[in-house]
Amino acid sequence: MNRKILLLAIAALASFRGIAAETPRLIVQIVVGSMRAEDLARYAENFGEGGFRRLTQGGTVYTDSRYDYQQTTTPVSLATLATGAMPSTHGVIGSQWVDYTSNAVVGLTDGRKGPGAYHLIAPTLAETLRQHAPGSHTVTVAAEAVSAVVTAGRGGEVFWLDPGRCDWVTSPYYAPAVPEWIDRSNDERYNLSYIASEWRPLLDRDRYVNTRNIRIGFPEKRGKRGEGRQPEGGGPELADDYERLLYTPAGNTAVLGLAKQLIAQYKLGADATPDLLCVCLDASRRISEAYGPESVEVEDMYYRLDRDLADFLTFVFAQVRDGNATVVLTSDHGTSPSYDATTEEPDRFNARQFEVIVNGFLNVRYGTGDWVVTYGDKCIWLNHNLIYERGLDLADVQNEVAIFAMQFRGVSHALSATAMRSSYFGSGYARRMQNSFYPRRSGDVILNLMPGWIEERDRCRSMSGSMYGYDTEVPLVFYGTGAGQQHVQRRVDMTSVAPTLARLAGVTEPAASEGDVLPEIVDL
Image (cartoon, rainbow, N blue to C red):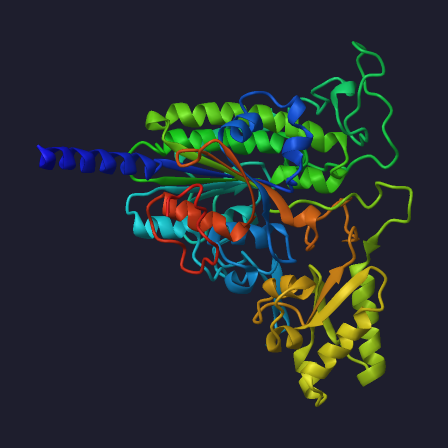
């Protein structure tokens, strides 16, 4: 009798452990571009029940999740989310860099077969899942090609919007053509239906938290047609249909609309082998950049996204067998305050001016020459061939430029590549700059701007790419299989997302991942 009771107890325990360690049939990762950590709470009062509120009230919410490096731009952070690694490991330091042997600019996704993962180094979650779980489908959709490629890595089904016709496309790197059902949708110009109507406020004026409206106007009187007075400056001029998608909430609606079709057409989550769907909402970032986080436009975009998200979540959990799915909501970075949000002098860094002045400084020091190859994303690349031709020491030139750069208005810190390679920075700003540094690609001198400062760029009132909290702190919510209803207040590094999802799917962590598996999601 005792033996029988023991066997029953073991069986019950095994059954319990099996439920606790259940593998979701479908993992959906949703990346909302430029969403700050505070946005979920800031706009919560006007959210409905089925979208953001469904996730935050029914899932595991990490209230202190952040990227621990400086270069918080979209390609860099999407690579971190996909690989679980720091930029210093995964090698994505921006959308482009310089090949020092030829002084040619190398595009992150450029190659002879169109956009692809030619220059990605670390394996992504999608690659890892297909390798270790044969039969798994991995599908990625984004408005922009770079977002889709960096998230997906090598292989899988990958789609993005074509800037010419607003069609859904892929590249020969991934497939000879899009599926026939997408082709039919493209022929019908279905995506244009999302921009058929003008962008107007979703709610009455007094329900908005933000007060600054730039493009969308409120009627002067309730019930009166027409727009209210527009502030001076307005929004960006939208030249074509692609921009009308990318710079309005319609872009997010289109991406989530295709995501639903992808689930149905590829039968994602239909069997016990876990599938992965990655959704990148680039329109959120473009709207934040163009109008700023203090704007009604950004707030209205979130309310519209909340409705789209509610519809999408309902579809996911109805479509996947037994509702056995896990949804992860996060962001690639936050965004800075708008440079023109106050009456004070705008805090913007003129990158082109900096590039010219640095070249002039080196002309005076070492003679006339094209010393600077280019500048981008707070990195300046020097002409190594010319430096060696003049018999100069590269480290000395780098250090001189770094010291000179510190004299520029808006520059907080400047570190040379030599200092990055030869030193270990265990704390402070230098550690976060070093976490963004990849020796084969990063510039000769890396800048850190003062808090609130951004680079001067067309269509950008606000930007990302700093080590400050408004850029590094992002939302992180797990909902569904594996995620209980809880708020976790300890600090979490965003390198933890990929290894956690890998373990949740029952496969090994991506090879280069550095983050810790989150114990609230995966029972260690």
